Image (cartoon, rainbow, N blue to C red; front, side, top):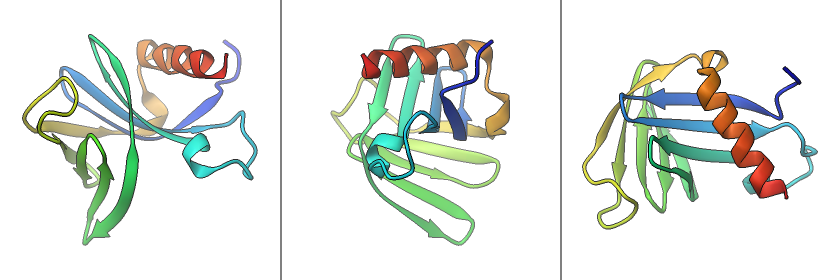
Length: 120
């Protein structure tokens, strides 16, 4: 397999959802952060790029605020709470945190497909 065009920085999932932060390796470090870093929400039905708003850290908990919802996570668990009426899911998603180097091949391919679509 050829070299990946991205690096996974964070990977959280449950039985139905995967949330990844990726860094696009095909872009120079001078490119806008919003172009180099993408937060992606995958489910069996769809892929959605989350619209990053802000980030913060409270104790051991990292927080990422998106227009679509709030992601809170520690080293081993997380929760994504969608904004009511935004997106295709309702209710908080409890998530496990995974080592970013070990994403499943199917998910890796889905990210590659996403990147090839946005570059064309």
